[in-house]
Length: 260
Image (cartoon, rainbow, N blue to C red):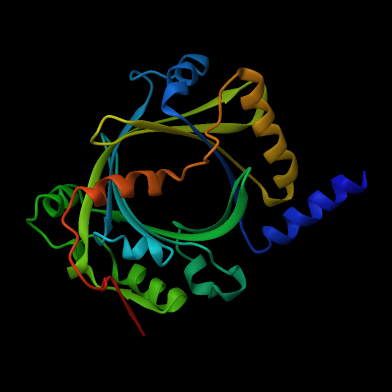
């Protein structure tokens, strides 16, 4: 009883200020086939996406805790996101929370928990393809509000002229319910240019349910025999390391961000 109370207290402290919690588990390539079969995920019931990241060849943004990406959803709307991790929710000005696609979440796995802030905005169809083809500058994708957010929260402005387009990754996304899980499950399967795959399964829950959600979700995966990746790889790091290795790395210090 005391141990349970201590666990709940630890999670309450770690998630303070977050609007919700997202619990993630990565699935290694060798287990992807079994996961697809177990949860009945096919190319016929997925949402197809193409994901582009923007960073320096030396991943200067990622090193500063910043992720800049854009997504093309086949048959759907396109968007771009800037994400900052970690963040202190107490230092987030109320004005950012007024945007529909701004959120502060606690990202949890068995290996840890970190709070992040992400700010998404719509992107006109066709623009992402033009940027990827070098026909429009990367800066065109991101809004002034997103740039202001990074300056306010991280004290940094992105120098878009130093960034490269990394990707695209082909991604498949599914959202489904399982009788053994009270929360909707989201699965994303990413394929890099070398053909390697990584799947992430996740659920979202209210902060008050953090302890039970983490335990329940991990127990479900164990029960159905899905093997979790012991490295708990971040999809973003897994993708960016590959694509950054494919472009020439300039000598000297990266100039991806400018401090105010």
